Length: 445
View 1 (tube, rainbow, N blue to C red):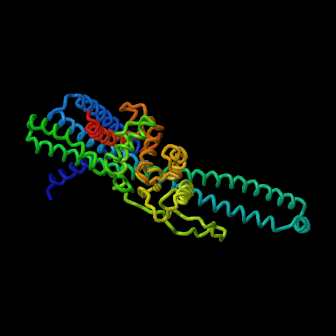
View 2: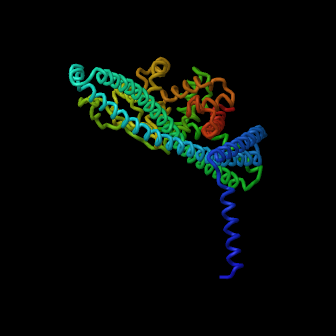
View 3: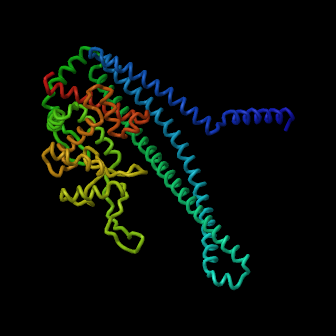
């Protein structure tokens, strides 16, 4: 091997090592980079939505509708990139929390060992009566023993307080971790829906181009033909999650009835149910676990049931009460499945969890004339969705208020503004626009 060859190899190694060192990130640098990239993509999405909104205001034409589809596809792809970064950041946070929990677990273990020693020492001192100590030891020894006992008891009390604090901290960290793991799983589900949306938009675009061959006149004729399809639209099946499909016209009648009582637009109501149906297809169907409780820790059987599907202390009792009122078998009724972490248990087309359904039960009974109201009944589910959307602000009727209300419906008020969940709101509003066209045809507009 020549000297020049060795020198060249050494130079290449130094360059490579320097490059690796230069690109190595600290956790703080990675977090900052991800946040900057997320902010940039969020701004890009806002700009694309603005252009899309302007395009949608233009006169209906082939060029305009293809452009709208292109922007919708581009927005969906950008949101997927945004969500990939959000998942990466979430994984970092989960990793950090898992490490912190591991260290805290070790600390708890050390505290338990220390506590055990103190308890043994206390027992040793307690085993000797005061008379034994006085008879066997000098007076100074007696006072020393009493001081030692007092000191051990003081340390024992402090140790109990430390242990209680550590266990509380550990439980809180595990709860937060479980929430973040559930959020990551939820984001992955949305990713799948987003990709399906892109595929659907691409297919719609290709169908338009294939039928019209890119000619405006042919496209306008196609629009006229679509406007004659009211009978077809009315009879087309409207899919409902965990319930039998019903004709679109019937679903629209229920939505109109609910809208008259709440002020929420019928197209939005149907769009939310359509979105929930898609989520249902991806999640699948689950049953309440009918494994009997092994006991209460005291050797007694409580007669209660574990429910891996639902959150036990929040939803199991309400679910059993709902099923009892309806005369249904709680272990034979499908509910939503857990998303990997966290809990499922949402019921029927409107996807209410049992504890939330109980909050709406009496209001629903008065409005729909069904007591108790059935979460799997199409009309009742549509009214339930409408009431929740109204409570979330959808009755204001603006695009922004409707979109925000749907995000609150999906992610709750705390998470509604998170960019990672934006897809749900966009998807619902897209469905609402489609349904509004169908409704306009039905109403002869």
